[in-house]
Amino acid sequence: MRVRCFLYVTLIVLISSCKKPYLPPVVSSGNSYLVVEGTINGGLDPTVIKLSRTVKLSSNASTNPVTGAVLTVEDNQAGAYPLTEITPGSYSANLSLNNSKKYRLRIKTPDNQQFVSDFVAVINSPSIDSISYKIAGNGLNIYSNTHDSNNNTRYYRWDYQETWMIHSNYASFFKSNGDTVLGRDMINDDINTCWLSDASSNIIINSSAKLIKNVIADNPVTFIASTSEKLGVKYSILVRQYSLTSDAYNFWVNLKKNTEQLGSIFDAQPSQINGNIHSVTNPSQSVIGYITAGSVSSQRIFIENRQLPNWLAISGYASCTLDSLLYKYYPPGARDPINQINQKINYNKGATYPEIPVNAIGKPGSNPIGYTASKPECVDCTLRGTNKQPAFWR
Image (cartoon, rainbow, N blue to C red; front, side, top):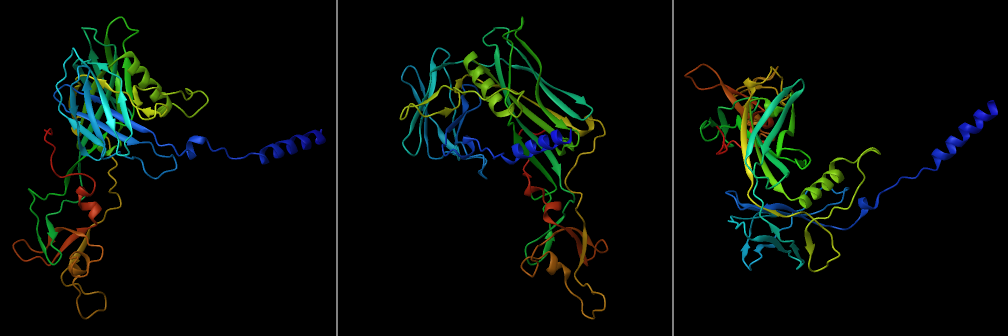
């Protein structure tokens, strides 16, 4: 029995010692594929097409926008509509689509590579019935609801843009011009209240093709944890809805499987992602993307903290402290005072890592003898967002 055990253990050791790390070819592949994102939008919102190239998994870069390209929307009756680059890799134009025509996208990259999408019919999205939310024990679930009584489509995709209000840990009523401390303009230079924004990164799709009625109810859009800073003050989400053809829907299904549902032997296995964009210059070259045409419907909701349970948001300010700094400070045992305001706040007079003044120290109506102050990340919310209220905010 002991001999058997010894042989068994020896076999296990030998097998484990022969293991070699396996690096999938995609990790070291030098190919850089063109990625095309967007919809030819004929509604009130502009058409926005984003161009980028894939990056290696080992790369530190998360995005690789394609700038300086020439993009044109074409119809099947020789009409052409140029797009303008508005930000690096994003191309836009306001278009009015004719439902009787078909449309496609033509791309010419700076290296003279040409790509074109298939002509597609215009499919306008029905209106979103509502965006709703339900409170769970550990957070907030947000849903979309829609239907199409005309049965123009049974395939849908959604994305969203979320915005939320934050407050820095300390409200600053003063600022330094580098040489001295001045009162802050709290109307035009408030750095206590800001707005942060983020866009969806997951693929949200659904279909009513197998349902009797063309109704999508309580379709999950996103989940926000109860501890999220997004729910600390006020939160808003704009959900956009797109109508798809069955081919476009299958493209997004495969893309979702390949990007979000891999990781274990029980998950869907990688599959070829076939879009409707092709290289004219090199027909064997792969392109990632699927262009559709039609109007996009959208709806925005607001959620205030007072509408939610007494959740405690994690703000990231737990380590913030408030210093008391004086114009004349006598260190222990010193006969001559030092100016802590110059040392810690006025960056032209010695402050290497300047703090931001918060409140004045001294008797009301008299000149301050100093200021309370803290690190910029505890006071200045513009380090993370914008203090300009969005036009849609209410």
